Image 1: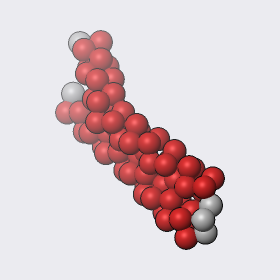
Image 2: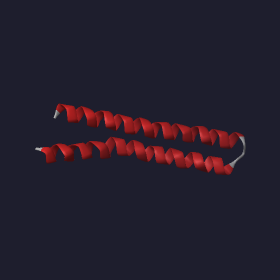
Image 3: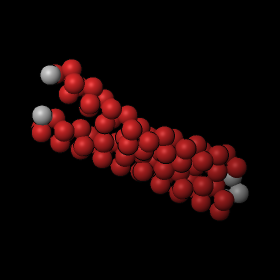
Image 4: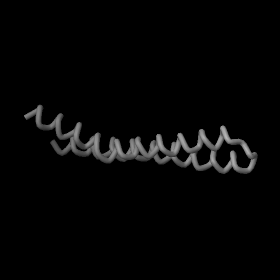
Length: 75
């Protein structure tokens, strides 16, 4: 069970890192949109930030719950 817990924790960290990378690219897109006075680029940046935040929350909440479900069904 220790191996499964380690896999779940690393998967959670990886999902959160992916979400943070998407959110960071959104921040960059907003900055680029502001410098070019491009409203569509700013909107794309905000969408990426929100999407990255949703992915981070999924990494924090959903992945550990899936892991608990797998562990409980294996017993």
